[in-house]
Length: 480
Image (cartoon, rainbow, N blue to C red; front, side):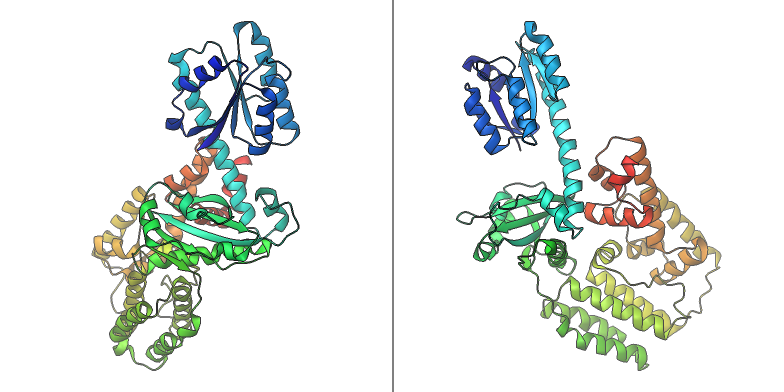
């Protein structure tokens, strides 16, 4: 909610402004009402509201002077000037000095909704811009950049940092219970990282304040699907690392579709049996054992509560072994080293990843005897590509498409490389980034909206993919 203060030396005028608008409907809440401009200035200086409605002419301090003081102190507070008809020139002067807008007393009630909706749209755009800059700063590892955005304590005392990655089932509600529980002196900064994903940087002067895990009741009450909790660090430049830890932990939903708060706990030391078993199958000519191995693999991950970090390790170890051993046979497969975001984008869940590995091993065991030039296969493939071209904004998984168009997913990989010269993932990414570029050039949509319309629900991941393809972030692309 955007915080609003109302300042007017006449109480009836304050009541008129308060009653004229449906504040809550448009995301505003009234944080203070003042007939004294002096008291109003103290509140503005200390509480830094998002918006101030102020009469332009008041005893001692004018609305214009309030606005000038706020600008001089670098406060990120916007002002709406309220004036009578005889003071219209003053209102125009206020606009020249940076007032967001003005309205004349008495307010036309028929115009109230239009006016407040216009203000809400402005704050939504401002919030989105700040969100982009904040996310870029936090993930940069640049301490100077991070300090520009985080409300760090003025004292030289040690400050501790922790990150929550929150995946939501629905819109955020009651999230404060998660960010800063009662009795703990915690400062929390929220960053929207997707349409259903929130990053929360939590700061406290005492380590014990951060040592807390939300219970299942809080998760259910707030509509949260998953919370990933990073380790704690006293180093500001470690925030980027903490974000990755939290996101890896929250990604446990890739393995188990259950609500939980998961602390970051790498368990790579438990992966040796998984890697040894895979090595035996690939290098020991034991491909007939792959069914038992894949089934046991999923059970092993479940029993030992392994997470996304271990999934990434397994995938990249498997890719390395397969490419080194069957380079020619797998030349056109979509086998490449991936990070955790790329794995989640490519596979719906851990079972899908295991299914793909099983199909690859099956092709190796059977030999690639099927001709890829058969007319029925190419016909099905062309229909698949046409479907992708029409629906690339949706969630697309190769496993689902292969079932829909009656082509083994391993053969699909080969068909993409042989016929389109790129992998399935590369083809879909190119379509999405092309759409994003067009929307950035020709619309005023927020970057979050553009990410969703281009097929990316995770803005953080969209930012990385866009930069990989275009050499710059979406924000910088739009400016250029």
